Image 1: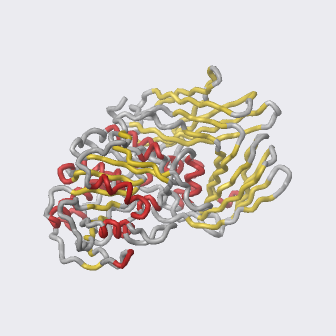
Image 2: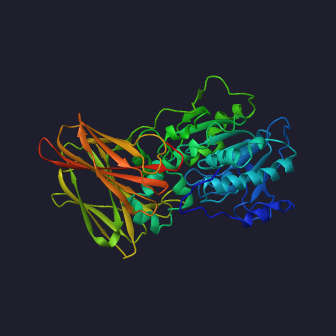
Image 3: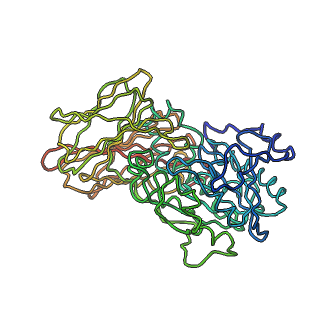
Length: 519
């Protein structure tokens, strides 16, 4: 079957020769493991993608227990399972596995690769791992995008016979809205400058994952899947906290709960974990341990159907702005009745300044306090936030300054006021097919409103524009799917006025896939 990853399929043929060589004597890993146990040792000659490690054999090793193969997520490597996390200290997952008598292996895939490149690589690595341990099948424990990579290896690259089950921790099985945002025109300047419009980000868009699900689900019935999700925002004013504010609803700061539940899988638990700690043994071992030795799906857990309910409508309590930092000032309206507004500003460098100016001239500086860590969608960006209680209605301004090559993204999250909700429709569209979009407004009474949608392709060029028509209190737009296959970004702007004459604006972002042979 043809795999379509527009603009991005850069396959690593060098790995084929590297992985064809027999494994050499294991060498100690650079990092020490938590708890004083022996560190994993390198079992391959490859450095980087294609590298794999073997955990020390525990004194209580139980040959009746499966070999556990740990797969990292976007931007990661094998060492994320025993090295430092971003916010929560050392990851003790390897320690938990060792102390409980499991033999372990850890792989390094392409940190910013597609599920196609990583699935093929993982399938090849599993040949070496099963031979090393003398087993026919293994159990995979995967964090974040690593769960999608494992799914691709099983279905599309012949690894199903080598996998008994896959347990995913915070995996975006249906994509993440943060990846959609990265391909919007509001975030485009920043994401491009940071080099974060990567292959991995592209395929994590909700529109691309619709496509992946359509060619993947139900095609490896011999492999069992179990999922774990989180609903914690992460430390305040960090990238995970910002992600939580953007996504809305229950999520771990990167992946919504609805996306972490794989169609056709068994959902084990949704716990109070953020995306960084959901891979830690001290957080989730008690949840996954019973599953590791279970012969079938445990009782009392939720099984997710192959055709799950539609994802929640895209929430719109946000105002978005972005572009070159040196452009100066950009304005936006704010209606009356808003209880609070938090302005989150991401910049390409610490040398960029940003401040909010209220209609009465009051100035609210934004202090850049944190840098987005590797592996996240806006990795490398500086982030700062400021909250204004009972903000004044009227025209606000964001004033930025910095070098000519600097860029910014502002995400303003409102408490109260007008709420917009976008239903983008389900599934993949065929080129030229009609697609219906529905927009609803709630909150204070709106006397007049107008909604416009712009459609952008992978290169961020606007491919089309359409106005919504009001029908029975809702806005509806009918758009034509572009002839160009791939993922297309939906950028919706809603403007209007309330009964007291104050103006409002809301911005929403989503995506959908266009591929041949799909309805």
